[in-house]
Length: 145
Image (cartoon, rainbow, N blue to C red):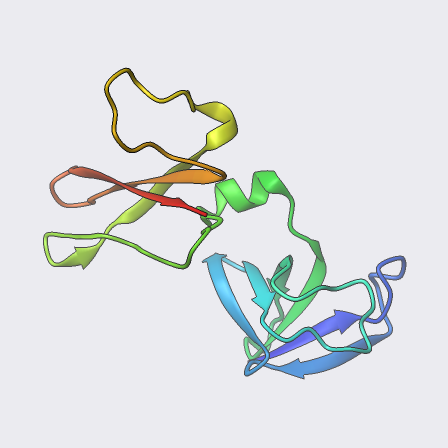
């Protein structure tokens, strides 16, 4: 797969550079729309940083995607893309990876240690909620740094 990336964020209609898929990976896909991120952003694209999510559309030849713009927070949620703190940690249930439901970040939860707790979350913490499509079981994964 190849990605067409606008050289300038102000000129999203082109001109473009073409980048092979060994420089990016697909985070999520719905019909003709994709969200990708580059682990190694092309240096000639000054508006793009490493690990920045980009909203794309699959082109008719199906081997090429076109970067439309940076992905929004709403698109990240709609495409069910977690923002991992420490790295991907998808639990399994019924022999399959569970589906990401949502993320709860420490700015939206009670950070105060409960009375009698010996350990508690510190610094930055996020909780990732998953559900099983077969048995509807739920699991949460917590990460912090």
